[in-house]
Length: 364
Image 1 (cartoon, rainbow, N blue to C red):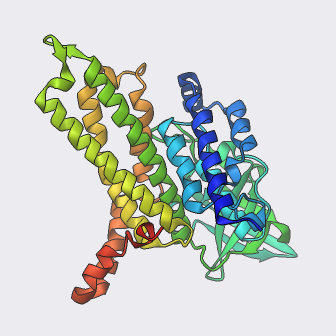
Image 2 (image 1 turned 60 degrees about the vertical axis):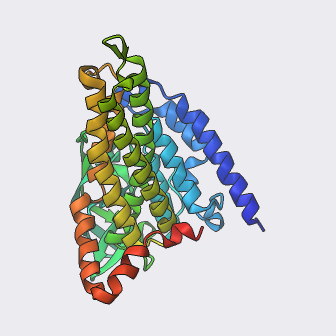
């Protein structure tokens, strides 16, 4: 039987391995992925390292890593703009194995991503028929398996779908990464369909995706801060680095504050992931989105014209940040959920409601 120390050591080894692997990502790989090429060699390294199974429970074939530590892999991947569907595959494999399926044999993705049902499931003879359409499905064209939730008699069911059974219309996000439209009208066997575990609904699936995106956003913002500070110290105007100018120093201070806030949000979201505690994840996604809205423009302002060029690396991160800010629910989506819960808490319950979000993370 594995111990907590074993789990911690495994998590540390995974994070160390991730740091080495993703630090070697080349700009050429990122650009090729944005042009629609599949990074086969890089993905093979990700799979060989075991990252795709990081969120799978030990009894289902995973490593038994603490989920918050596993989510930390995505912070590392985000800090290097890794052009692979790591978050999507980690989440799909968690979803599949909790429903009793085997993990996907390769890259995977999940649908829907909007918090509302997109597919309907009905009995057809001895099997099933699934119909519907979902947009904004990340990396769908390259996935071997799509883990999807479908509605049947008002309840969520889990589908393990071979990507070749779907009609996929390629589309791209602002970051240039696959964000496809998936249309389904397919016959499925009983082997492809299971009742979804009670905790998995379209809303909780979207919240889980949001928690993973917050981790990626935190990593990308850390890299944006590093790049911006370096540039400010190297770019010389009027005989001194622009980082010595008080106005620029003030901008960098604001940028650093937003990066720290996003990092804190990522810690809260990671701590809430395993229990699918939606409210802390909602608060984290809102705060991370706010951080991106403030920090990314500052980074471009400090970099000046060069930061807007295709040749500069800054846009690899800022375009991802703007994309991730809106994926799995933008700020207005999660703000509305928080607002409704705050109103329901009433005057006496408002302060406990507000202070509860960091409780899980502080208890770790």
